[in-house]
Length: 248
Ligand SMILES: C[S@@+](CC[C@H](N)C(=O)[O-])C[C@H]1O[C@@H](n2cnc3c(N)ncnc32)[C@H](O)[C@@H]1O
Image 1 (cartoon, protein in one colour):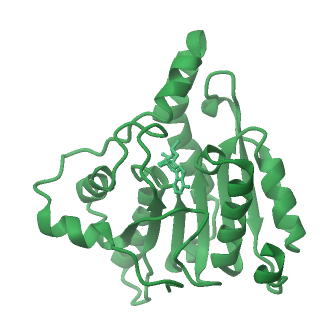
Image 2 (tube, protein in one colour):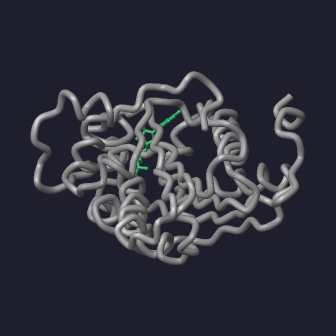
Image 3 (tube, protein in one colour):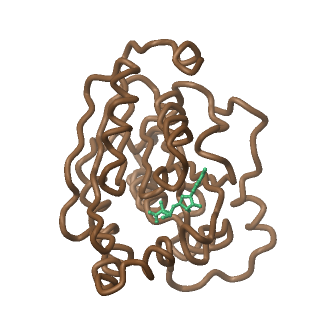
């Protein structure tokens, strides 16, 4: 599963030390600075951050084939776990359905930057998972999405919600290349991103030989102030170029 020494899984460590989790999850605000800058459009921003993006991801995940949730999944820049835990819920339901199949966990990686999401920390994500009874379905690492600790061709699904735009252009390219590298052939990439970035991500994927790549506007429920969002969906082809060659 891992390409490096396995990084610490915060879930295991926090199970030993954490007290009773809160009764309800709480996810904070995306980029509190962005909220201030949105000025009179702050109500739109707050709606997108507290409700709209949750609804958008409910719809996105419901559209995926059910068997994708049996495979290992990865949420890059998971923050306090909004998408991570929606995927974990699908996995928990598959376990409860009890068909005896192996259901692999969903991995969350993040650097837990508080300027990008208020109250961001592994403990906040852990508490959210614990309050929803989903600790057995998640693995949580502190890791940079431009340098994923996972082996090639391991994940059936990689998601990114409002995370990759936070880094510089070259790092965004690395993050998309890394997401593409760790997906298994036939695996799905689903990204919700501020408008304007999906173009760059599409170009990178197409340069890797990916053909099933497309993006669209996300709709009014995810307007971060005046800034709309885009949804990118892509499928890793069964034969791809050599990622090492592409990176050099
Ligand atoms: C706006 S928050 C979104 C969090 C979550 N995906 C959501 O939609 O609720 C962006 C996240 O990207 C993370 N992030 C920023 N740069 C990162 C990097 N280089 N590697 C991993 N995570 C990063 C931040 O710590 C933050 O949690």
